Image 1: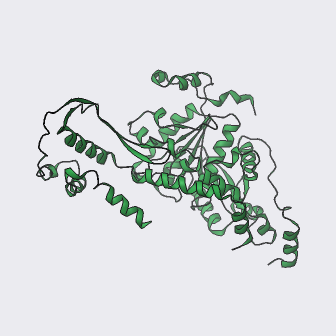
Image 2: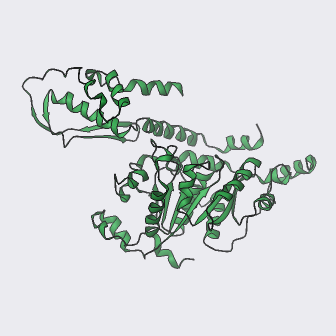
Image 3: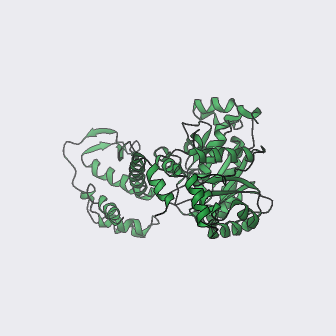
Length: 297
Length: 136
């Protein structure tokens, strides 16, 4: 998997970029030409962890040496910038690029922690209907030439913003939580994805203790209902709240449990055979005792 | 409420909550000040009009930007001065706004401009923002 390690930067494909910064030009020349993969992260339901998952998958890919561009497709309600802690460095957005008000390089925000990861922010004072699907597809195509991965953080819902977000993608990561509403919406969204797109599932915010007591849908149960290839299982941990408070993706923290879950998911994303986590054996003595006494209600 | 929430409260160090609040304050300030390009153009025009009464400025070189800094958001106006007038010109007539109201620039923007007399830029534009802040 490490053969492409040098792919951390951007290929030298565009000749008119001579005017771009010297640093970027140098970086571009260092890397082979790649037509990367565009992956949309979507869910239907809001609040299940799309943006957090996008940030963490992106960061984990960058840790593996891949060049990654994260597009915030949630025009009007952007948040990927704050989850990544890059909000103070945003100056332009992808609508400026589409409308030729600035160059792509002016809008891309480089992440200093993992330099092969960049953010392309959404416009905050515009509307989702301001984006034409064809323009979005062209933008994603352009980015694929320069990055190994283009991750598109879709807005919640199934309207225009969602349609624009999925249009340019070859793969989709559907994020759900083990809740009836989230699983239902995930199923609906899968039906609305373009034909031929490769779909994988992330089950987020799993509480193993609740599952063990039979009070939460298990991964196996979600799997049985949705029947999608499982990309990852992310346990519900307080550290995610802390990480979001600080704008630091958990996958950059080597000691983080949820970070490990995302890093493993990304290994699977790249085709590695990594066993799905089994959190069911977890919990302290009292948890187990409570589960035993509490029965299977 | 349940043990998980208790655990969450226990494990979350107070600092990160404070960090979150400070980051939010800044990002909201920045969001709210994210004026539409037409409004920035209007502000630019008003600045040119007001400052031109006192000095001769390079209108093309004039640059108005918002900058998010460590602890606040600043309005930065870079105005190259060509010369200073011996005596300030009289203030522009307030009759100006109604005339171009049919223009394609948009009636809403112009209506907003009419509410704010040219002589009170400094305090006026801040008021609606403040009201919004209070409502949160």
